[in-house]
Image (cartoon, rainbow, N blue to C red; front, top):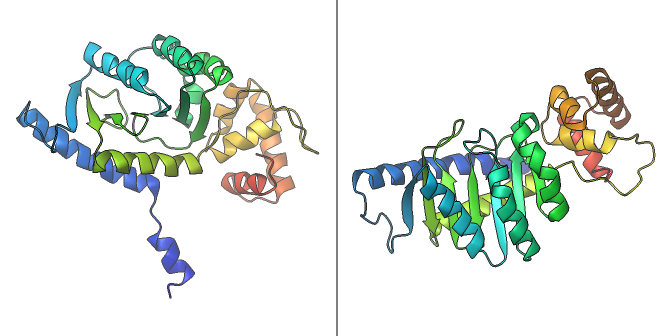
Length: 256
């Protein structure tokens, strides 16, 4: 029988898994660059797409072809403003297509995405935030994925991945990240939680997502001093020594 420490070490870290998948995909892309038009996987399951109009059209088609759901990993920087894709997502949401998006905490410093996110949330996008999103990715149903090959700059090359073991792995990793991410603050919270002041729930959500005090202040449009004071007060009331512990304790109490 495996002890608890063995079980913990055996668990897969979804970010490590995603990094491993990204390394594998870069190798696939290198092969495609060396032999364009030659299938790397049986049935032309992987296609290399260079940045530009072809990429934008591929992303639009992925959304248009979806019949159930579009899943997205997103973070800055953006080559084209997110508002250029806003209309299509709103149209697909109105048509009954579900959207789930996981954002990196960097989005709180991006006026581009924060300017369109409230309308997308109101229309039905389910948004979550996590401290680290290593790359951009979109998945249409369980059929197609579009994934960037660089981690911290706008990618010049993307891979379009159709049904395959690679796609199955990316879907599984997205679901693990979704389970770890916390709801994106934005829509008004309709419930009442005893002892919490205005913005406290959003502060706790942002803490759990890995946001800094500066990010929280800008996102919620409250002063840095107020943010620092409320973070300290919430940590004390939760008996938390770290910001992460505060998020965990808040989740246990069902405050978030």
